[in-house]
Image (cartoon, rainbow, N blue to C red; front, top):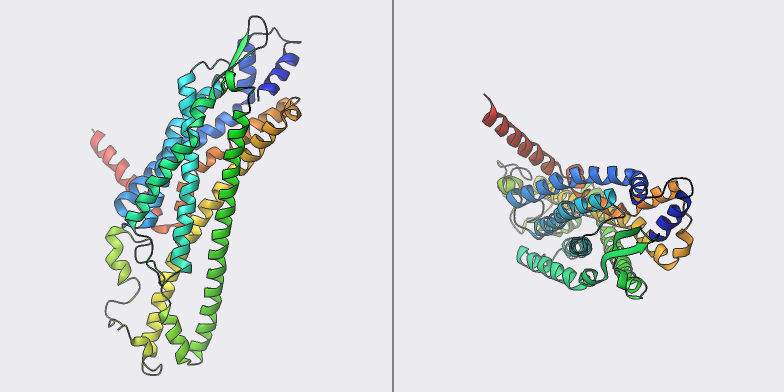
Length: 404
C-alpha cells in the first residue's frame, strides 16, 4: 500500500500542486467503493448480530450449538462496533492518522476477533461431527461448549498480542515538508523481519483452519450421504414388508435432543410436531414387534426419525454455509496480503483502478462479520419468525410510547 501510494504521489505531483490535503482527497476518492462497502456492512452487522445474540440467548433452548452461535455473534458484534468505525476513520483520513494507541487496539481487536471466530467454526464443526458421525455417543453439552468458547477467546488473545507491538504509526517523509502517517507497521519495525514473520504465521494458521474445516465437513458429508442412501434403501424395503430394515431404521439415533429447539416450543417440538398427541406413545422395544401388527407404529417411528434428521440436517447445512462464507470472505484478503508482503515490488505501479480494486478486496474479510445473520435468516425459518416478532414488538412499542 505504501509503495503504491508513493508511486502514485510522484506521478500526481507532476501535474497538480502537491499538498497533503490534495493527496488525501485523491486517496479518499480511490477508497469510495471500500467506504460504501464498509458502511453497508456496518448497518447490517451491528443490528444483525445484536438480534442474533438476543434471540438465541432468550429464545433458544440451552445447547452447545446455541453457545457457539452466541459466542460467534459476540465476536462479530465486537468487530462491527469497534473495527468498522475505525476502518472508516482510517479511510477518510489515510495519510495523517496520528493515533498510535487507537491504531494498536484496532489491529489487535481485528486479529483477535477474526482468530476467535475461526477457532469457533472448528468447534462448531467438531460438534456437528459428534452429532452426525457418532450418534450413539453423548453429544457436547452446554457447559463444555462454554468452556471451549472461553479457551478459544483466551487463545486468540494469547496468539494475537504481537499485533499490539508490531502495528502502530508508520511515518514516511515524501518531501522535506510533508510526511505521511499510516496505521500500519510501526516505523521502527518496518524494515525488520518481524512483520513478515507474523503475517506468515497468521496466514499459515488460517490455511490450516481452512484445511481442518474442509476435512471435517467432508467426513460429515460422506456420513450424511451414506445415511441417506441407507434410508432410501430402507424405505424401499419397508414397502416390501422387510421387518429387519424397520428395526434398523428405528435404531438410528440422531443426537439432536437439544439442537434447534426453542424454549417455548420445546414441548411442542418433542410431541405434537413429530407425533400426533392423540396417538399412543411408542415403547422402546416397538421395533422388535412383527411388522404386520405394528405397521402404523413403524411408519410413525420413521416419521419421527425423518423429522429429527431433517432438523439436525438443516442446522448442519446452515453452519456449513457459515463456514463456507468465512473461507470465501478471507481468501481474497489472504491472497493479496501474502503476495504483497512477499513481492512488494510487483505492486508499485498499480493504476488508479487497480489501487481501487486492491483496497476493496483487501477488506473482503469484513463481510464475514456481517453475513452470518443473513445466513441464519435464510436457513432457519423459526429464527426469521422470531426476528419479525422482535422487530414488530420493538417498533410497535415505540409507536405506542410516542403516540400523541
